[in-house]
Image (cartoon, rainbow, N blue to C red; front, side):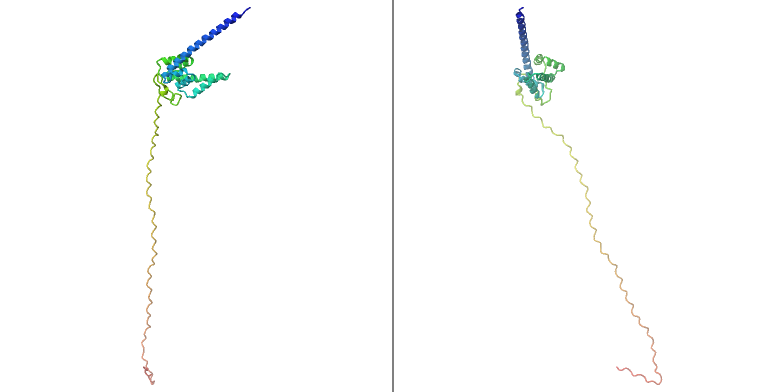
Length: 240
């Protein structure tokens, strides 16, 4: 039995399916580019970045205000996704990063988790809704992330033309309460003056020497005249 007809029919159906898939993929890619272009413009980013490979991913990271290293991780996952087994792990990591960014993009446009889930599953359609809808971009991430904390720009302007944010005013440290003035030390008592030298002890005046009593004159005995005895011759008077 000849099966060539069946083979030919199967090959044609496979080719037709591939063509249909390719056309659908192209449609979604075009819709994604249009949606990204409008969304970038609404956020103050260059809309033409949507048609440049890898650079559009960088602007999506800036749109989410995630740190810039998110882009480098996504770039590495995209370049090494062809490696067997490792490619699956890298694609899972890429999906995790996209979930975080989708949550931030939805929050920056004032939407909640439900909108973020739809953005994760149908990014092409949801970027069209963001770009052509009434949603306003209001960056909520803190400065220093991938968007550098710049305020949103009006539609149609270039992100590169955004003037740098004014330098932050230097933070002035709160005044330190002055220490209470040091109280003057109590006056130091003057040094005790040396006691004046004690006067040498004054000896009490010596009592005047007791004068010797004048010699007492021996009592004068009365001289009795010598009466020469009778018959004796008186002594001659003293020769002068």
